[in-house]
Amino acid sequence: MKVTLVHPSSANPNANLEGVFRVEVGSRDSRHSGKLALGKVKGWLQWREQKEMAKLIATWRPPVIYARQHWLGLLPLLTAKRLGIPYVAEFNGLRYRGILSRNPRSVKGLIIRQLERWCIQWATAIVVPSLSLARRVAELLGNNPAIQNLSPSTHYASRITHHASRITPHTIFVIPNGIDPEIFRPIPQGEARQKLGLPTDGLYVVYAGSLHVWQGVDVLLHAFAQLVKQFPNCRLLIVGGQDEPNKETYKRLAQELRITDYAIFVPFVPYEQSALYIAAADVCVAPYVPSYCEHGGGSPLKLYAYLSCGRPVVLSDLGEFVDADLVRNSGAGILVPPADPQALAEAIAQLLSDPNLRSEMGKRGREAILNGYTWEHNAERIEVVLESVMRIS
Image (cartoon, rainbow, N blue to C red):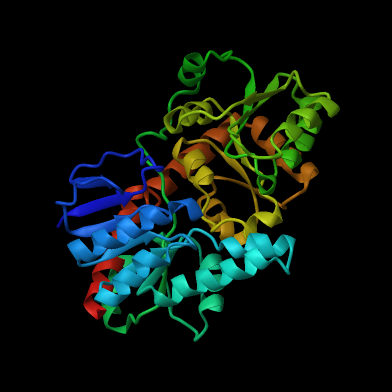
């Protein structure tokens, strides 16, 4: 069976997969057919790309469509619905929630909520990365839709096959995100540091990700200000950040806390290179604050990257939204209350003081990833969903 990836010219998928045809919207190459995966549509300016996607759907009439759904992406969805083509919409968050959490009367938020509701209602099935988001989608959809949890602990393949006859339109499937275990692998710490030009001695705490306020980087800086008093040979690497409006505030905060000699800010690096920074760490941190639950979809990629590199993690306990149970059940790290610098500092200190514990937790984390959280596992679950929706259509 053929797979065709259709994406806007403004997007640039970083994977070249064997057997997958890539077609930029607007190109004249429309010879490929089969399963059709739609690129995520970004903003109002891409209406033209959506129209061309809809034309390709009408021309190819693939047996099933899998789309990373955007709140504005109604036209391809309506085209598939009109033609009777099964359409699986993947949601990685509900945009309206973040807007209305800041301003409950926002006209933009109310409009986006209605558009997202239509996207959910008109799709054959919905895929989300966390059970928390599944419940929010169900609430927006109404009519008490079925939720099928395909996470590693639910023996998804046998369960979904056994109950295939019970799958109905609008079923919401929970499929956690994954990671590439070949890129994010347990590189020896010294080797990673040498490649990055970092000193091979001393201790490193690493945060890798965006600098949005819900990531809790300010909490981490406050925690680290306490930590360096106990571990003066420790350094904090904050890796990432592009165009976030508040990113410069963290450098100013580091100055106010008098830790500029200890906190190193590394601008955005390519995907593969971020794995080196993680591998260089003694401890990796994901200090999410509660507002994160209003902005994302859960199942955070940075957690899987940390674990896949074989590094112990300190993670804010936001429950199923951040896969806290994965860390708890695997014993791959320490969970802390969110927005609590003291608790964060104490957890990091515990790990920095015990190299054997760090090593053991790192091994457990890597094993947990290989047992269910790679992109291969993710693809297997999606394949089960696609086969299921084709059977009921």
